[in-house]
Image 1: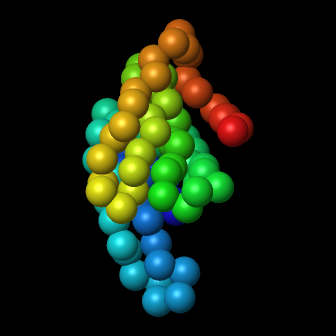
Image 2 (image 1 turned 135 degrees about the vertical axis):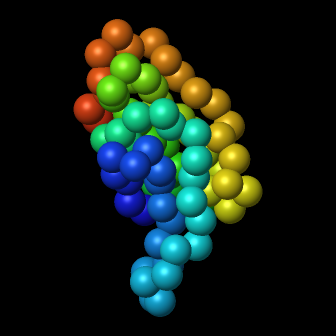
Amino acid sequence: FSSSKDSYVFVIDTKTGLRKARLVGHNSTVNGVLALADGRRVLSWSGGGENALKLWDWEAEECLVTMTAHEFRVESAAV
């Protein structure tokens, strides 16, 4: 998984190096990404005024929930 200022989260195949999915939904820099233990869900977080955490089903390329409780940018997360 990777994240960037382009506001996307990319799922990268570690064997081929090719992109498997692009998760679209943040409207600012994605500061970090974390794969959950089930291998299907991903948590990402942002700043730049959005200040949100998003939980994704990366295989479906679908945001399951958006959490926006923070006043300032989200810098880390743990599960």
